[in-house]
Length: 285
Image (tube, rainbow, N blue to C red; front, side):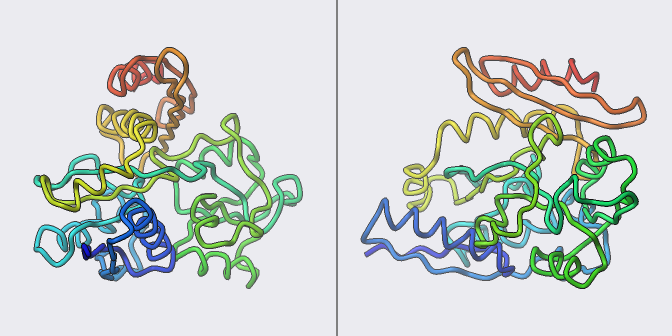
């Protein structure tokens, strides 16, 4: 019997994601038991700073990574979009199967929102694309976990909010989805819907995680994260990217809004870095 400890944030969504990873590992290795190690991060403790700032500095992942580096856990699981492109040495990253990457509207359909309706999001990327679709809307910042944000809609603080479909699905809250934004409406955040599981290089956990690593997810997520790395963009930037595999390699679609205006582009390539470099050129970043 192999016993593994999986570090995770303590939020309801993070715990649900960790249980999914545990189930994948146990399905691949029936004699393995996985226990969850809850970690409170600085991002969870800070209730006042904008979520974009906290995500950019890794406030939601550093303490979870440290649990592995300190030997308090064998693995660490993160929402991949929270993971900075540069991290501590000594950790390998694995990417299990990916959930739907799309952004969704909760509280109302898009067409059902009246002029001037207040819509909440903590993401500049979502806010900029939403304003392009419906410039009449009052797009306002919001913080809190999924349940807290949904509660603010129920309480009448917002007419609707934009969330990630993956998080709602993992929490069994698909019935909260009133509109799914397609790629033409809203390009997702790089690595949205993907999980990243880290373990010490060369460890038993790393060899076991390699068996649930999805090569197609790895390729597309690495392309999306490569664009982040090449451009130096962080979560405070209005940058979106979504990779898909095609017959000849990779297709990477992107959106950016900055002082030069909003623009969209796509590029093809045979490797993550190649396609990200081409998209960087197409987006003039």
